[in-house]
Image 1 (spheres, one colour):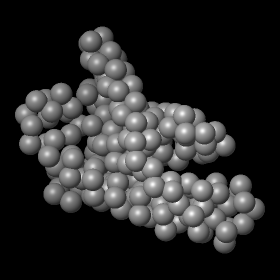
Image 2 (cartoon, one colour; image 1 turned 180 degrees about the vertical axis):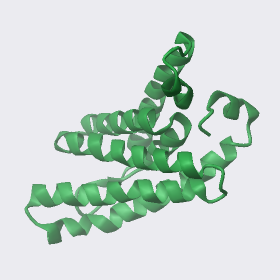
Image 3 (cartoon, one colour; image 1 turned 45 degrees about the vertical axis):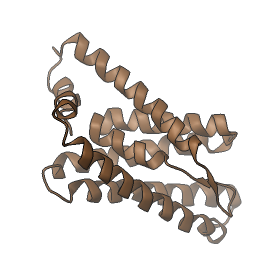
Length: 182
């Protein structure tokens, strides 16, 4: 869908509307997935299912619209959960995560391992980004390192779950037709 819209300015308005609606829906899904299960971490953060939908959005919508959905949805979860100080970082970190995963997925989607590798690469900015932001907040790189294991666990789960979901969705002719990036 996104590739078609980017390659021509004469895209059908209905296609553009559908892409914007799907971006909003995936942003909402990301927000809910982030909030539905929260497992607290020693650093005051929490493990959640949000990375699964951020990576899913990157593959379904492409890198740009996936970045918007992942960044906005995750930042909204921070707002609604009372983590307002984390909103700017989350918006940027999750958008970069989806952008990186989506760009690589475009190149690797025909390979059986492409989904997982794209997810792993996408999770690198998440782990590094939160470590750097928390380092800035705490004034200590070493102190912020306490959050890295939790972020790595969340990243591993996000990659595994999104890979399984994408592989399952690929089996549906309807989903493949509706999401040409898949």
